[in-house]
Amino acid sequence: MTERHEVPWEGQCTDAAYQFGLQCAKLVAGKPHNVTAPLDFIINCFMTELWDRNFGQSEIRAAFEGAISDLPRYAAGEERRSSTSAELATADWRMTESP
Image 1 (spheres, rainbow, N blue to C red):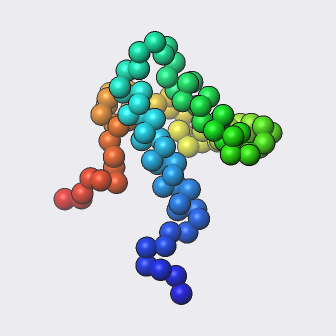
Image 2 (image 1 turned 90 degrees about the horizontal axis):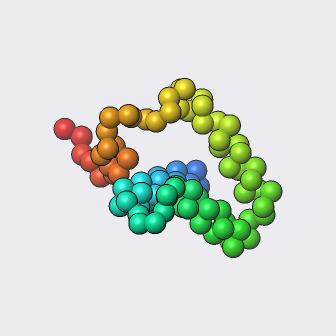
């Protein structure tokens, strides 16, 4: 029998991605000094961290390329989720309560 708070592997991956994305948005919203492309810097650091954690270069490349090729389907042809909401990127949707 599983614990009540146990989250399946897929859910743990989703949670980790959610937290990483939220943290990236907050870092970029902080307007870093002397960094012209903050997302490039973040992704470079992330890929280095994956390599340091013993993922292979080909594994990392294939995972990123696979995710990039799937992005148009997920994004439905839109460049950004919202062109008008500056708060959307840093909103922690899981912390908001329903009415």
